[in-house]
Image (cartoon, rainbow, N blue to C red):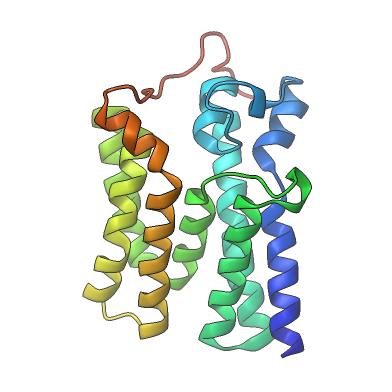
Length: 203
């Protein structure tokens, strides 16, 4: 039981690290929570900081999810331990202790979790996400469609019941976190993604 508690606590703290906020302050001296969509995730980082900073925000957020699952594997060696670490990392990202229990939507961190649990599913949903974003320029739409595909693909590939249940709840969670985006999409008010002028430079 102690191994599970350590997994959950450490994974939550790792997930709580606000990479978007830290990179924004380090590179540009700005708080991205005050600009654009006011989200700390990679999409808002792209709008405010440019593509390379956004890439690193996405990468670090995904690694947080991967680290949570790997920690669960090392400490417990059980599927439930992997899931506990992954869920705790996602919870940390979305309700960061360093941001007064506020945070992002958990898409990149959730993708990192799924990457370890089911690499084939991750590849499929990422390609679908990338295609939708490329065609429509709506990151939220790509994220919602990709989330819906996760449990379906897990079922198709015969993943363990515990992982499939996680996939279902993860998908529902992403959709619920995107409720404001869904409303804006339906009303044609959702912002399309495009690089900010003059901020597309590399580190």
